[in-house]
Length: 423
Image 1 (cartoon, rainbow, N blue to C red):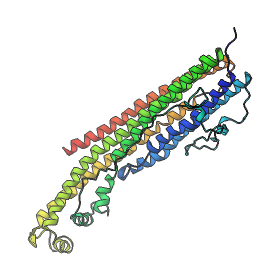
Image 2 (cartoon, rainbow, N blue to C red; image 1 turned 60 degrees about the vertical axis):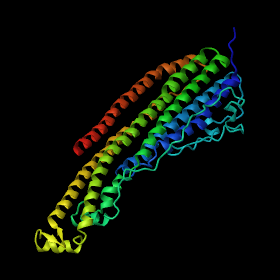
Image 3 (cartoon, rainbow, N blue to C red; image 1 turned 45 degrees about the horizontal axis):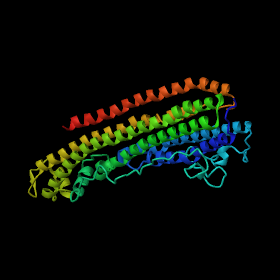
Image 4 (cartoon, rainbow, N blue to C red; image 1 turned 120 degrees about the vertical axis):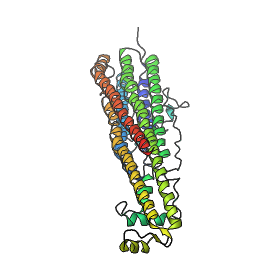
C-alpha cells in the first residue's frame, strides 16, 4: 500500500512556518517590548529599573524572538527540501530568512517580514487564502496606562517657600530643595507599571494561541498530506521542541514576568502611600509655620541665631514652638528617606528577576538543527538526542521561577516592614 505524500502541501507548510515567523511573531514581540518592557511608569526612584527593563531586558526579549524567527524559517527550509526530494520544484531557491527579508534582523530591532515572494504578503495563509495552513489569529488587547502618579495627593501650594527655606537652612538633603528631595522621587506611575504586567500576561496568552495553531496545522499535514514514519517524526519534532518547548517557555515566562511587574506596582505603591502620608504631615506643619511665623523666616532667623540660642518670642512668634515644628519636619523627612531606601531596594531586587528572561533565549537555543526530514530515523535520533537537554532547560525555567518568587516575597517583606514602622 502506497503512502500519501503531497509534496506541494509539504512545501507549503514550510512557507506557512515562515509566515508565523515573519508575520505573527513580530506582533507578539511588539506587544512584549513596546508595552511589556515600557519604561513609562518608572520615574523618580524607580528610573534605574526602567532603564534596565527598556534596555538590557528588552534586548534579551528581542534575542529570543529573533532566534525563534530563524529557527522556524530553518525548519521551513527543511520541509521545502524534503518536498523537493519527493518531486516538488520551488521557484525561489533562497532561504526563507532571505525571502521574508529577515536576514538583516537584529536583536535590538523588531524584524517584520514583507512576504516570501508570492506578491500577496501573507494573505495565502488566511481563511480566504489558497493555503490550507492558516497563520495564528492573535488576541492582542489594548494596554491602558492611566496618567496617575504617587504624588497626585500632595499640595504644597502656599508653603513651598517655607519648606525650601527649611531644607536650605538646615541642610536637610545635601543642598536639594524640598521638591527634588521628597516629591520628585515619588514621580513613578504605578498604574503604568502594572500595565506592563497586563501586556506580558497577554503575551503568554498569544503564545498559547500560537502553540495550539502550530500543533493543529502540523497534525493536518501529517494526517492528510504526508503519511509515514518521516511525517510522524516531524510532527513529534514540532510537538517536543516548539509546542512544548520554545512556545511553552514564552507562555510560562509571560505569566512570570507579568507577576514581577504587578508586584513592583503593588509594593512601590504601598510604600509610596506611606511616604505620601508622612509628607502630608510635613506640609501641614509647614502650613502652620507659614501662617504664624512668616516674619521669622529668612533674615530674622539669622539674627535670632546669632543673638542667643533661643530668645523667646520674636514678632509674637514663639521661637521654641517654631523650632520644635522644624525639628518635627526634619525628623519626618528622615523617615521618608528611609522609605525611599526601600523603594531603591526594589530596583536591585528586580534587576536579577528580569535577567531570568535569559532562560527564554536558552530554551530557543536548545532547539536542534534538523537534517533530512525524509529520514525518519535521523529525525527521531535528533529528537532523542536533544529532548533530554530541552527537558533540563524547562526544569531550569521552573527552578528560576521559584527563585524569583523569593524576590517577590522580599518585596512583600519590604512593604510590610515599612507599614510596621509607620504604624
